[in-house]
Length: 236
Image 1 (cartoon, rainbow, N blue to C red):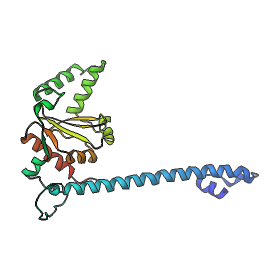
Image 2: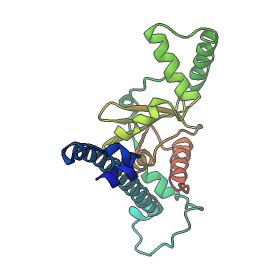
Image 3: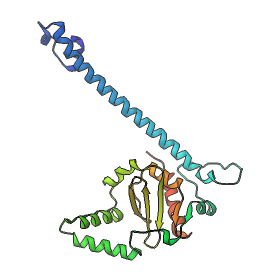
Image 4: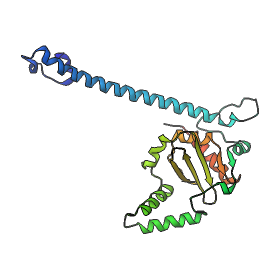
């Protein structure tokens, strides 16, 4: 026990001079438990990391096969390298969209993109030299900043780990905003032309569900293709 304490905890052998077994034993147990706890934590972290890498690898493989998941053809299609993701055909893009009558899409955003851009300009000018203090002002500032100036360190993106299936993906094409929401009340609003730090899991959930749109047009098709390409990018 003294040798263990010397090697693992830095004690000098002279420290134990005159000490009995009963006095040394508790010290040994305390230091031993510390080491075992640290080792257990490191092991759990490594296991979690390994599991996450395996899950992400599996998810990437599923994306590579996405274009054949609903295809009626029985002919095998050769997969291309991840660095050069396949494009979805017109028919496959169409299958990724769910047409929903406009009256059923209750958009909380503004009606046109120009209004949204103008509002952001006004809010930025209003709080250029002073932080918002009122709750409504602060909420407006935070949501618009997330929309126009996404920050990967924002708590919004950390909350993605709580987004699970079933998940709803919806496009408001009049204002160029798409919206991802979960049954647990987590919402992410994004501009169609901007890139956001979406997690691999959320991207997978988005592509596993059909995007709700008012009509089949170029905007939703481009958006689906954009997310599909993002899903197939090599992960470090």
